[in-house]
Image (cartoon, rainbow, N blue to C red; front, side, top):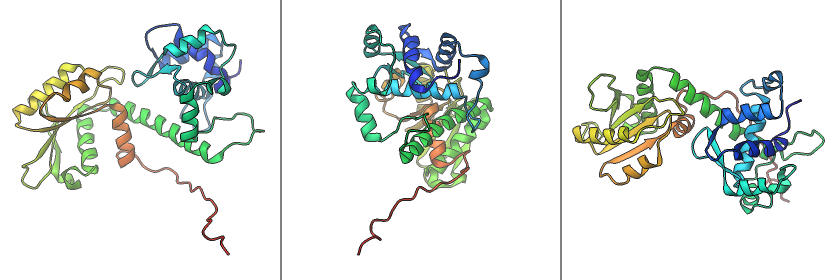
Length: 301
């Protein structure tokens, strides 16, 4: 069969997610839904005009996003999802389809659409679209995909490269007065759990210590690693530290740093990508489009 629309994918996606009580990876969801709907391998490989994503993967991402906004599924961590009690209750009703009209029974979904003004992806060319909202939602989707590409690319490079990248990013963010010479990657064995330092003043009286954990995006940072980093700060007589990873931190890690005297910031893979995009580290602007509208102040007699 041809690739279904994102609305047609919402029910099979929820059914697949709801079949288990644990979480399912996005890649696993795509595989299982594709098999359930008997979408041929050739159809599943059809790519968007940009070439950055398959058409099937793109539409399934939209379906998953709308289910999440309606509270039918939740995203416990990057790259995974699971059904909520509300989602299971809907499945128990035996719906023959899930579309935008059905999702409007949930106040959170209505509020989200109203506040964000995100228009649905309309596949029928005969239906008029809200162009500005479509551009905004497409921009958000492109940034999401870019973020995933960034994390994958960073993870594929050496630990030394990752350490230098973190220093570059923090300097670009304004640490060390934005001066490159104020930060350096240590890149040596026996550094006491520290991979880089940034001086916040000329004499180095105030220093931020950095550690970079280049882990598989689906492998969480063990709590002991966070504890070791905090302990390493004590060895350097430091009060500030930044621990960055290409993966994610468990909730216990965030709870732990709230109970220590050191000022420690945890940056996971998703936040790392967002910061790199915002501060244009390893990123360049490909195209710029201006959306124009009538200047109401000019048209006054």
